Image (cartoon, rainbow, N blue to C red; front, side, top):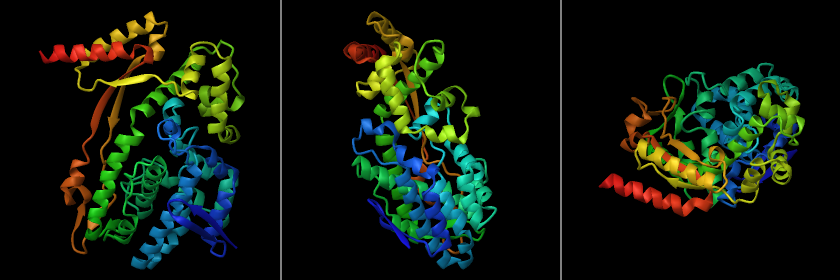
Length: 418
């Protein structure tokens, strides 16, 4: 039997149960843990900014598998023995995001959650997943789990394809996130990149020179996507509000607020959470809590939840151009206005520092022309320029004091220029 997923990016994704490696993927897709990814938004709270950003980690993970299969089929043309890796590659591509918490990467900030560790934990120790993998190879859970370890050296082809500068994950999410947000930035030349992949003398994945322009294009688009979508100030404000919601609950543990057992563990005892409770924590569960807290919780928790659920968000102004001393001056001014307007200045006001990391090479992917091997940044001045990181700073505050804040920023800026 075949199973077909109709995907907006990759069109028909066909699974053939006659192929053991694809039957394995079909069985993994049907597990409770993987089906949960339907209830985890790929872009977290970004739908508050881009209304089409409703795609799930489920959809993305299917897409990553699709790209991994395309790359596998191309690489076995270069080296037939690479086919020995297809079970590990396919499994890792599909399951790489299994450990995401509610609202995807937002959980990393608000719950101090590490999705890579949870993905590894689920693959290696969650019986419904590991038992499927072991049917095909008893070592598969550990082999896949190792690819999710960030500390592992980038010396193996599989690691390069699962976690590197240009891996299957990044190739899919730039295409998918661009499509769903309507921004048109992430239209990478996937076919050209895949066709340029080969093996270098050390046995790792490399790129033929003909693919360099496609790689440059990919990294430029990555830069644009981070600046316009992933690091957009609305995302920063939304994350700020959610962080304050969780901190307020932690700081007021003695106050009466409804919270179910599974989310309670995620907030207060994440180190003790079991698989059952972890899998119950998804976007639907979390949003239900936010809606109840909006109507039933104490202040300021109720107001914070109203801001997020009703998209009546805090405001943010860029103060990156101000000196550190001037930033502290505007913060003190904002805090004073908050208190005058009956807002807790420790919760509804603050400075958010943001770092945009440029292309960070780990030397796992190199250019190989058949004679010489070079790193990506040594092969392109454009790529070298894209490695630069940028720092920015925002003052976050309630909308009611927006005019005063903007006027004060102008005053400080003008005084600094005198």
